Amino acid sequence: MCGVHALAADFGEIPRTRLTLRVVDDEFKPVEEASVIMDCYDRPVEVRGSTDTNGQFGLVDHIRGVLSAHVTKPGYYLTSGELWDGPSSTERAPPTNQYTVVLKRILNPVPMVVRDIAAIMPSLGKPCAFDFLAGDWVAPHGTGVVADCTMVGWKDVKGSRNWDWKCQLLFRDNSGVAHHRAPGRSSLTIRSDHVPPQEAPAEGYDRSLALEESFHTGVSRYESAGPNDHWIFRVRPVTNLEGRVVSAHVGWIEGAIRLEGRTSETLWLGFRYHLNPDPHSRSLEPKGR
Image (cartoon, rainbow, N blue to C red; front, side, top):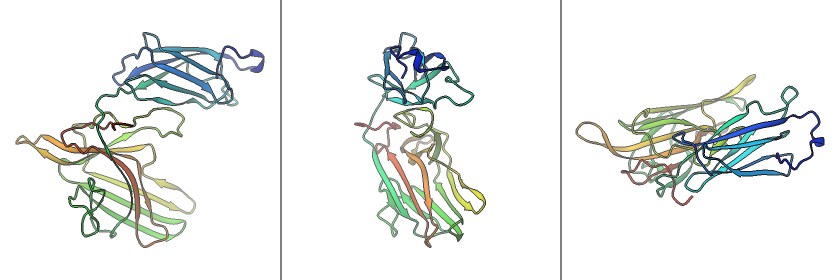
């Protein structure tokens, strides 16, 4: 990117930019000696260095292309991505002189079960039970045993360019989902390599999740959730005499639950989730990644 080694004559009217990265952990404490790599996509030169005692890394140079950063430190998850998409007709330099980068600490990684689900709903308009530990529908529709949640699907298809699909997930008492929003890799933003929090929340779960996709001629396609939407879930809770949850299985659904049903009589859904098999741990950090 932005090496002081480049000749100013190459940049015309592009100003020299003074820019600071401020690196903090997930408790917003400065991270010292984090390794920083910054570059611009239209130049072969990278700037490398480390943060100071205040967690800051400074840069002074001509910036004319997509500006990206890559921040690492042992004991933390990688954070990387794009900070700025380059100059426009009205903007010749990044719009801000300081960017804050969060490095999430590696706290308690555990073995996680990863499931990629691509399934046809056994029926429409009727509850279909799903077992998260088995990763399948509950018998007689699959190999599942425990109804961790039920899914009800609907669709209304009038043509290839005129359709509505819906699916609702319903959870038992003290089970549910909690929304977590994090940017995808293609977004113009910087993102941690570990998307969810390190630990599932102890409360704040919703017992239902409603999803919808639709398309009608002359109207933009509608999706109630996109790739930046993720859900932390809790199933099979055990409570004490006071009604407090003392154990449960937790996990997170990675990105949107996808629906499809334009050309068949059934409704297809697809999603990927990570599950902690230890009911006494709320860790969402996969071990050995």
